[in-house]
Length: 355
Image (cartoon, rainbow, N blue to C red; front, side):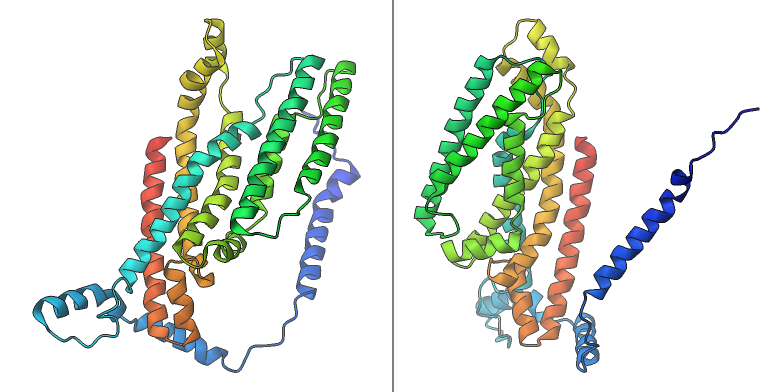
């Protein structure tokens, strides 16, 4: 007969305590929401939206055909869009996909260096003080380069979000990180543990800082810098996607099998050989899969960025809702749903074949 150990009193009440805490958080969250009741026009607006979905503005789809018929056969089709080139559903959806594709394509390359920077791939071998001093020197050079790039970016676009004493801030940050490296070296010499890895920690901090800003906030910033339009949307998606892809690709590098790298080193290969013959070939399927997954998210984001003036179908959607043109809004929503569904399906099939 097997004796089953009895649970302690704390283990028995642990699920109930967790449930009570979660319930308390829910009550606290809902208590902070100010609900003033349903507006009087809510029913009419909801009915108008559904009526627009049921009776969409098909002229917004057939505008290219109407323009071609009027130009070729002089049919004289009455259409408010018959003379506006590019102002139709298909053109706007293609513009949205192009913004998402270009933003993801640019960030896919820019994220790879950040991925290697943030990946924790160092072994547990003890580092000498000469190596730690070299790390402090490289850290100073890297931070100076980043500060110079930010300063140049500030001068070119006229951003005031970066402080004028940026170099002083970078110097203070470098000083305290250098102290952290020294303290980490002392801890590692006394024991077998390490508490800080400068390369991966700084890389993760940079990617976290990039991800702090949502796409809409970045779009508003770039609209002020380069003006409204598709270019601002591409820049916003590119910068935000670097933070997301850098994190995902860095985790893929951390989870790689180190056997091929060790075999190349044992055979006399260099670090460049391990990178080109082992690391990149093994990590490339994960990189491509992450890029396709990010492209799916970018398509949805590009549909929203147009609402703040960053190009794409979102601009037409917000204009349609502002003037209460619900049939136009209905056909735009139908087009967005079809576009996102197709891209998700195609991307999913591609990712299945890559991995």
